[in-house]
Amino acid sequence: MGHNVTPEFLTTLNIPILAGRNFAAGDDEYSVIVDELFAQRYFKKGEAVGAEMWFRKSGPRPGEPWYRIIGVAARANLRGLEQRDEFPLVYHYGPVDSGQNLMYTILLRSSRPTESVVRDMRAKIREIDPRLPLSYTGSLASALDDMLLDRKGVTALLVAFAGVALLLSGIGVFAVLAREVSQRKKEFVIRLAIGSTRHRLLALVLSQASWRTVLGLMLGLFGAVYLTRFLESRLFDIGALDLSTHITALLILLVVSLCSSGIPALWATKVNPMETLKTD
Image (cartoon, rainbow, N blue to C red):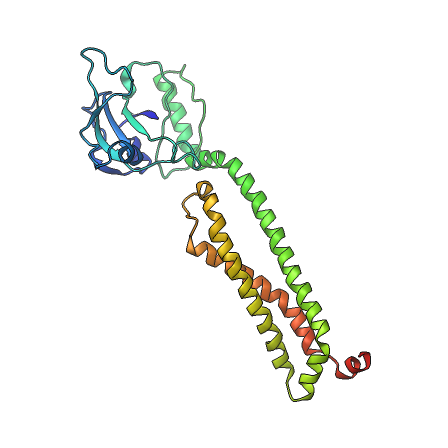
């Protein structure tokens, strides 16, 4: 996929040159810079800089020069995050004064507020030619937000589902442990009778809940590592085996499980021996 750019384009967007050089004033339309995906796909030995090529299957016309690669740039997500690896990118040198009737996109890097920069741009364009329209203006951050609008909606929905699942898991742990405490009241009374303390009962219930939680988390971790391989193409800047993400998820689930276990564990320390024996 090709883009006509001026020499300052890569510098403005902070896209580094990995090999070769950037565009210069003396270059012509046959000078191109390719991205690293292009170089890796078509030049296995890393010898892209200095190579000559043509983009039409029929080749150049008689006397027409070939395109020459003058540099290799880092990969940029110009078509969106999800399509970052679909097509290699080629940047063509396209001076503004080429005489072609084109629609140009102007990118500015400035520390000034966006509104102030846009106002000055409109005034400058009117000075050059009052008939030239400025169709869209905005910051790069707002453009990225618009690009990610659909993804943000899906992400918010997934976060809501994850929150509901986390709530249900906490309720499930609470219900299972509460039932177990209710069924073990006689055992707790006997432990108190032979010298155990209520603090030991609390530690007993929490420890038993903890090892079950850890076992469930380990099984869930193995399942997550296996299943996230199928989602790796949907992830951005994160791998299927990202250690920090899995550890964070495990810690959140562990905290929820311990909090859900706390109330039933406190119930176990408040058993009344006389009432329990009378009930039995």
